[in-house]
Length: 139
Image (cartoon, rainbow, N blue to C red; front, top):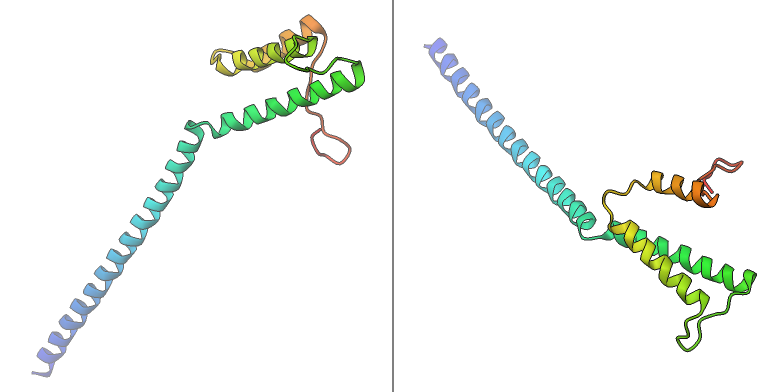
């Protein structure tokens, strides 16, 4: 009779442990699903940012900065006349043409920027490239 009680107690304990394991596995599946949902939501947000032009905005901001630096150098160091009262000065024509070229480059999906840079170097003898300075930083 004691053996029957031991067997029944053993079966009961196995059942309790099995239920406990099942609950643990279910909780783990829920945590995994929540984590996956969070990762997918973050990934979707990242993709949406890139699709809606955050990267393009950064590129255009960089192009704007480079153009304004160029205008400053042309006026201060090379004597170009600033644009006043909307007059068609050489500086205004230059700025308009640069904006047109930036737009053309930005919208041409088939343009290989490295080939474009090589073409400019060959035609006009000007090339720009990143180089590491003595401290290992790009300049």
